[in-house]
Image (cartoon, rainbow, N blue to C red; front, side, top):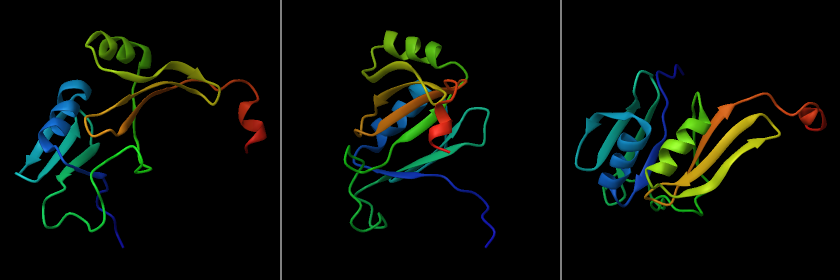
Length: 136
């Protein structure tokens, strides 16, 4: 099998809010839009995500719209997590996990999107000396 592309598709009960959230706050652009499916691309990259309306007949069986119990979250790696934290906080978005330097080598914070999905914003930094020795 030759994989040509791969991207996550998140089933949602509010396609419009999901789309606007990623376009307004994370610089994604709509590259395809229908009444039940939207494909977004991060500006200046080949990174894609998609949203699908849960009421569409082709929505996968037994997959409810995104929720906190779904076991899925989305990580967006950025150049400057502190600047993004400041920008999104000042814009009034609810920060779920405060900005922190993690011992494993990430500066990160988290928010919850309109579907209740956790969005992890990370910047790669040097890990704490010796941190990974006990895990690898």
